[in-house]
Length: 122
Image 1: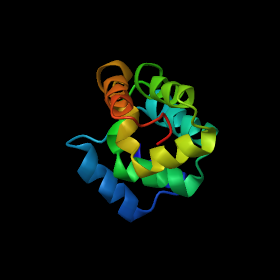
Image 2: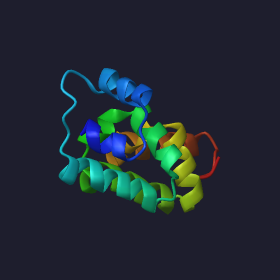
Image 3: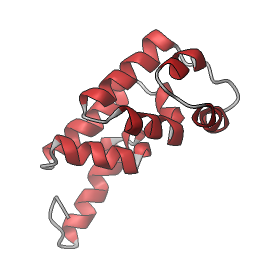
Image 4: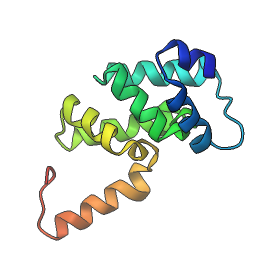
């Protein structure tokens, strides 16, 4: 995994940060986890530098199932009216967001904010 990330431009410092934050064993499957995840981030419009920042700051994302975790969050955000650029910026700022349950966490929080009088994009 580290060799692949290194080939994608990850620096030694970024790889070190990933090892520390990921946990005991940093061995996500390159073909089943890393490549699809990095490709998906690229499709969302994140640059290579932004992708490296997302992974370095939240390497646990490499454990996620795109179909069950990350993609539903992005679909939901777009359903709120966010465009691709806004979603990409949000993921870059708060990469942990793509691991949060839409039904259990995000929808109830947005509903609470609406009850306080905020609209979808505030």
